[in-house]
Amino acid sequence: MVHNRPVPNEALLRPLSVPARPEATGNPNQRVGVLLSHGFTGSPASMRPWGEFLAVNGYAVEVPRLPGHATRWQEMNQTTWDDWYAEVSKAFDKLVAENDKVIVGGLSMGGALVLQLAADRPADVTGILLVNAAVASDNKQLLAVPLMRRLVKSMPGIGNDIKKPGADELGYDRTPLNALHSMVRAWKPLRADLPKVTAPIRFFRSAEDHVVDPSSARIIQAGVSSRSFEERILSNSYHVATLDNDAATIFEESLEFIHGLTHPLRPGSA
Image (cartoon, rainbow, N blue to C red; front, top):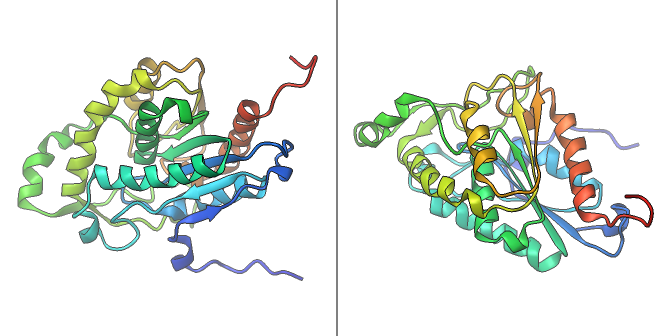
């Protein structure tokens, strides 16, 4: 008998890489990969259950660890958006090389990173899954970050905004301000690139989110050129919804979304 033992935190922090098993997807002649990116100051732990769910269903999965994350916030302060984007791009390249189609997904800043990928390489992205993605903020305190980062290195963290008791994304308890400045600066060019995004999008948005406000969802929907944009409201989760009470909804609906984009219609089933 196999007993379910708790997974050590160190294992949860590691990247996840699983090859495709197309025979398990119901379409054995096609390999499909899924890239899932965690968010700002977070870790692969926030995406691992989602990735493992998709892997069990036969999809190749890559959950990279963004540079400077899952170590010390001081290390993250030495990294920038370009570093994070390069890591996501590397994982994406691997999936493109090994699979016939690739879906990209991300939580919070991870959603912004995969949107930039979809804008830069629209021909390679079959679909996009977003969870509380951030490309803007109504928080006026962010206007002070360019000055604040010269005076202090960090401020209190934004992690673990989770309604479900006991859940932990294993992120930082401090927000490194140089890194924050880099992310916020990247939003403007990303918003300008949104019209280049053409892949179908399913956006999961928590009704109560203490980190990302609803402006990002509105901006993304208005900016992209995607032929399909579906928003799903999560009523029982906060920001890190991939570990929260609505996680199963995200997993099941993302599976349905991927299946719809990658499985050919049978004759007469339209």
